[in-house]
Image (tube, rainbow, N blue to C red; front, side):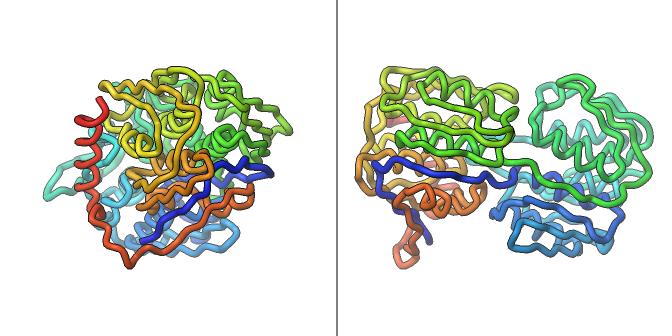
Length: 447
């Protein structure tokens, strides 16, 4: 098992280029199922474990998938003759459920494992299934699998009770090849969804976001070739912005869409971080000597993203003052609190509120990642620890969403390395055990 070792207290300097968005790439790769061309092409695809998983899933359906070292991905889905997404793959990444809509649209049948549990909270797919039924699908659930068939999908009006990102994406894809017009109301507004829409439209789809939360899909008979450049990852961009702030650094973040990160830049500016636009796709981020405490409340796009909550909590741990962080999206997304406290953070949790009293400094120690964004927060906290070493285990979480993070940070001057610790026994290598213990720690140790 690998872990990351960080020597803290070093201001970051230099330039970092942001990779393609994981959350945009996953649904777009899944959408390739619907395209007739045998040589679909995607560019700026990040090299991440979640991308490896979705590629394995397509291969299990008998698609042909080839990639290159420069972020290009070539997919031939004309060879698909299997319509089962097995539990062994779906359980490792909930976004695997995104093959449900495309399979049903193109082949009129799909058998997809239910995703199962999630460390950061319950994320049921009820909205997906209700909407697919409204389009004419027949859906049953047996032995932990969703079994869906459709003689013909027909357009319908879909009203989501709350915005659902993967729900919106699944229905967009299913409706693309349906007969007639589908209107999705209360649709999610995340930019990754608009990147999916662009990719589909480039291949012949007829989809428009007519209002911020309303998407209209006019069904077409077929899609031609998928050829698309994946949008940059706004969460990775935000993470490196915080890395500069938390180390009193001065870095240029390149290949970023400024329209996608305004809620992050607003909060960092409020905290005293200096942010200057260098070009339409790059910004300079300079961390102050003293970070100001700012309250944060997560909400769907365009508001502050839940995927940046843990990183901002690490920053607020060294700020001057007291702040309240409110998590409105996932009920279990404070599992990183216990580990930040091991580094010296002063945080108390009450329900979906975290009260953070800035300590001015953190001290390095051994910590353990509990989920993807929690792992990023621990890396940031380790960078800020006053010339102490921080050891972070279970970093496979990090590899799900950050491409070569230790290499990018090394390029900015950080002293950080990945080491093999496989000869040591990790008694917490069971996901269920980790989740249980982390939640017990939150419930009994920090409230």
